[in-house]
Length: 97
Image 1 (cartoon, rainbow, N blue to C red):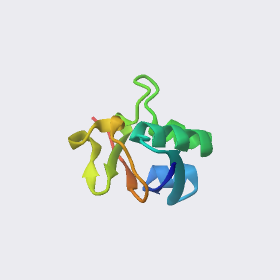
Image 2 (tube, one colour):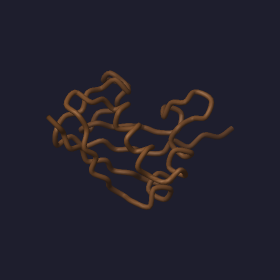
Image 3 (tube, rainbow, N blue to C red):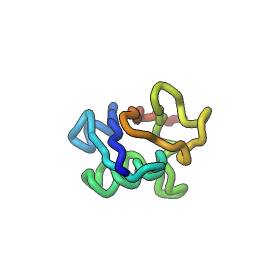
Image 4 (cartoon, helix red, strand yellow):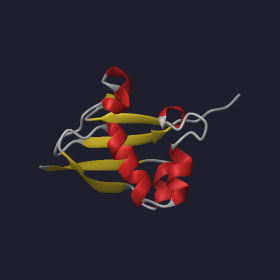
């Protein structure tokens, strides 16, 4: 069974993808990691450059990821399972020194 997830993109993620919202179809029991993979495959390369840290190969350093109003750090991180109708929000994190 497939599930449909609404993904909202803010800041540099919206600019690099050219979209503020994307509907993603995934298999049942898909995770936030699967959402990231699907987005990276289907959106322009600039989106991957903005989201995925090139050294860690993870989205953590560059994004605050929220599933249904909860940051994934208090859930199961990228292993958080998403269901039909869920909302996943990507908010850019600014680094500096």
